[in-house]
Image (cartoon, rainbow over all chains, first blue to last red; front, side, top):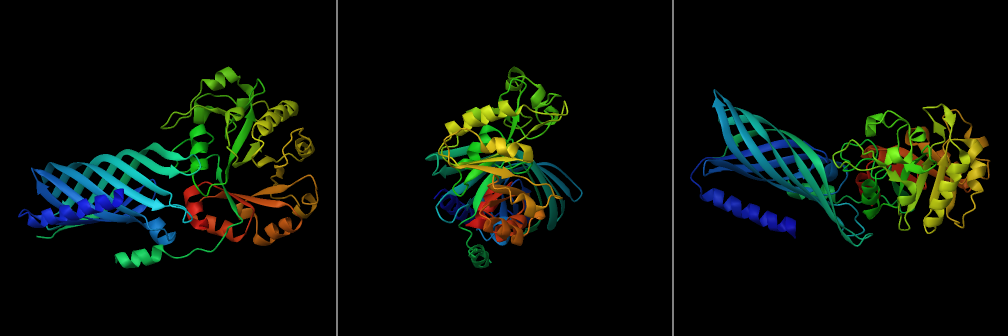
Length: 169
Length: 260
């Protein structure tokens, strides 16, 4: 339910973006964290001097190599630190929600909430390539049938992403 | 594209219903995505809380005072900042130590471990590496008896790589029919000879040192085969295809996904 709510918010944001007159960019990338490699795609737009990115992705190892669908939604808030020549340096904070069903015999869905801070270094004009290292925390939550309660497990987390950006309009 | 991903992710796996999955040293040993330190209380609880996990494997070492503690390495220096072995440290010293880990967990005594009827493999360390001698068998047996009595509902595998200890472990005076004596043979030992030892209920092998045929041969003699050093999804799949009784894995989630 939580995931579908976020997906709905994501679609609403896309609708808002489409009504914006400012430049909109599409960002695609490969992100690595403690759990998986994620293939991600997001839309960026400017609002109040800040750059907002909403996106979707999925865990490659779980989805492709283990046949277990592992979707992800994310939001990234970026602010420009410095632009020089074709280089652009942005500070950012991000939230990612990833989930998957570990055991098909029951409905024990594991939710992974990530809160990260980091930066993005990009190069280019209309088409850009970027790297995006981040660090923060990850909270794993699931309902344990064995202990009959919701289990929450917090840990240190890191993430690294490479990708490219192009102008949609 | 989304439809293709969904179709790929709905692929049905083979059925491995009879194989039990145990977490290695709790929820995994030396694995990058582990939330807690191996052999810690939280790590064991996290493993046991997951549906599809049938038990855990832990490493048991005796302190200088004769108390059984859970710890993997021979020396405490790297993981807990004390340049000494568990065997040469007192309970007081060990109780003040914490693992070098994000969650700063304390070391756990065996008697404080609660299984709630799930299974366990106790990897019993008989060697005191710091003083180059064997730990006191009687003290170890006392600790094991106490643990087995407190967890009488659980299946308990007592694992050793010391053949001399097998008879003593077998003669533990505990009313628990679920105790299994497990032996880890070295690579050069002749399995045909050892598997003739009727006191041994189960064997523990590294995944890359055992074949499907050997597993079958052990099971045909009424003994069990346990496999460890199973980390990647590929390794988990190869271990599942050997059809052992138990797989002790470092990536429990990946193993549960592969099994179900």
